[in-house]
Amino acid sequence: MRRVLLVTAFAAPLLALLPAAPAQAMPCGMGRSCSTTYYSDDSLTTAVGGEWTDCYGYTASWGVWSGHSTYHESDC
Image (cartoon, rainbow, N blue to C red):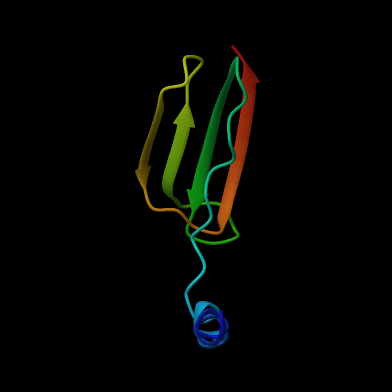
C-alpha cells in the first residue's frame, strides 16, 4: 500500500505536464447530419480542416483540428 501511494505521489505531478488534447468535433446525435469546420484563426476565413457525419453515422474528416471552429447540425 505504501508503495502505491509513493508512486502515485510522484506520478500525479508529471501528468500535469502532458499537453492537452486538441479540440475535437462535437458528437452528432442520431438522425442528425453534422459538420465542423476548423479555421486557422479567430477570423474564421481560412479553413484548415473539417469533419462531418452523415445521416447514417458515417464520419469523414480532412486537414487539421484547431481551437477556432464552427459547428452545424441539421435533421436528416
